[in-house]
Image 1 (tube, protein in one colour):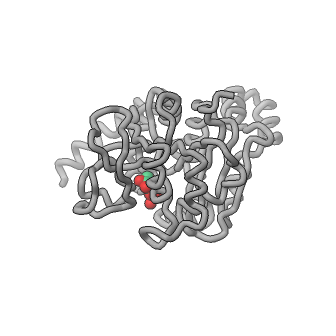
Image 2 (spheres, rainbow, N blue to C red):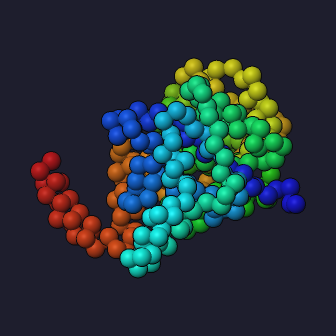
Length: 297
Ligand code: G1P
């Protein structure tokens, strides 16, 4: 086996999704839909396109709708078949996962992203792996994770997706330090979780896609609490800078922060406009709406 193959991906989905209350009172945030597909489906499709074979979900209490979502639904499939709804049957089939390809691990206490990833350590073992944060939805020609795996095949080490953010937003992200940020693959010399603009080493932010060496899991063993009183993945990755190396990967594609309401709305409009079956109607609506809103403001 090529030792730079990435077969496993971790999906941390244990968060409470409080920013989307009351919706998240009874449904996991990852099941909320962007047009007609749950957020988690976008993450899974991206991982599949990148060649991932094993999907590890780090869940928590109240997330059983996620497990049900990935179950096959024979009664529904038979009903669609009976009614000759072939297109819908195909859509349903595309969400089926191979038996044994998905594993669920519980994070029993909300101790942060680093802790969530560490919870999956036994399922990862001793191989490099991917992490996908489903809140970050990335639209593009080639899946962001696939682009990163291609880069990993060239440089190895650890790779995090990166993009520039406004300087006053650095405290929302992990921020990378680098001497030259102009190339697509940026060698990193510092990583800081959620620094204030004054303390940030740059405005190049970590976006929720990672390719990590198993050494990151060792660094998370007994890791102390970082910013926000949580175990931070960023801190464990930063420890690899002087070992295997860390690279920021400036991906091609548009990222939507579906962890925020404004980002979710923007993603809904952008994905709607990209859909042939919705574009004309949505465009006509926006065409009428936007000028009147601008005039009224
Ligand atoms: C997490 C990471 C942060 C990263 C961000 C990307 O933060 O800790 O380093 O920049 O995801 O979305 P969170 O948004 O979960 O607070």
